Amino acid sequence: MIRLFLVWALLGSTAMARQGCPDVRSTAYLAQQISLADVAFSKMDEEAFRKARWASQRGVACLGEPVQPGQAAAYYRMEALGSFLDGNHAQTVGFFKSMLQVAPNYMLPEGLAPNGHPLRVNFEVAQGTVPMVGDPVARPMEGVIRIDGKVALELPKDRPYVFQHLDGEGRVQISAVVGIGVEPPRYTMGRGMQTAGQVRRNTSATVSRAKRSGPAISVNVPLASIAAVTAAVSGVTYAVAASNETRFWDPTTADSELKSLRDRTNTLVWVSAGAATVSVTTGVAAFVVGEF
Image (cartoon, rainbow, N blue to C red; front, side, top):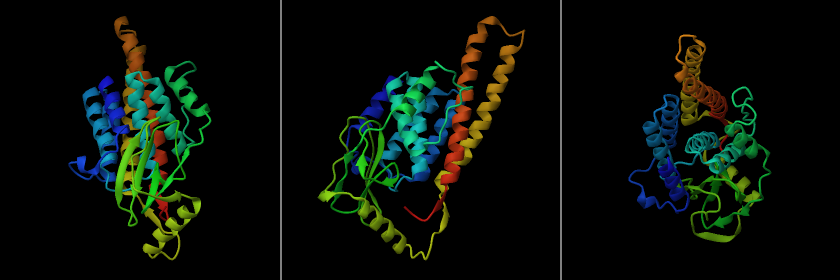
C-alpha cells in the first residue's frame, strides 16, 4: 500500500507528458476502472483494487477527453478510500476535501462511522476546513484550464485536484492529478489571468459550435455507467455486510472470528453507503443541461 502512495505522489508531481502515454484514454475507460476499484474493494480483493486504482491514476494522466465534475468526484472518493486503507489520514482528508468541493452535499452517516472513528475524524476535518484562497490561473496562449471538470479561476492550494488544459477546439493537451504543494503542469501562457469573462465566452462559444438554440439535455454515458455500477456495488456490499452481521450474532460463531467479522461489517457498510451516495450524485450529474 505504501507503493500506491508513492505512485500517486509521482503522478501528482510530474507534468504528465502526453507522449508518455501508450494510449489515449477515454472518460468511459476511467469510469470503468473506478468501478472496478469499487467492486474489488467490496470483495476485499486488495490486488484487484491496487490494479484498478493504478489504472485509474494512469487513466487520468492519459485522458483524451475533458473530465466531468461527477467523474472527478468518483475519482476522489476512490482515492480517499484507498488512502484510508493505506493508513494515510492526511491524504484521506485531502481527497475528502476534493470530493466535497465537487459534491458538497455528501454526508457520512453517524450510524456507519460513529464519533471517534478514524474515518469520521478524517471526513469531519475535511468538512470543517475552510478552503484556502487558491492561486490565480495564468491564461493559456490557447484554450482554457479546467479544474475538477470546470473552467477554473484559481488553482487549489490545500487539496489535490484534476488539472486539464484544453485547446481552442476542446482537445485535451495536458491532464494530471496535482498533489498538495505541487506545482501544476507547465503550459504555454498568454498575457494575464483566466477570468470569469473568459469562462462566459468559452461557454458561449461551445454552445454556438454545437448550434444549440436553447438548453439541451444530454446523457453523459460514463457518468451513467458509474451510477449504475456503484448502485450495484452498494447493493452487493450491503448484502455481504448483512450476512456478516448475522454470523456475528450467531451464538455458534467462534469467539476468535468476532473481531474480524465486526471490522469487515463496519467497512462494508461504509463502502455500501459511499457507493450509494456516489451513485445518486453521478446519476443526477449524468443528465447534463447544456455544455459547460
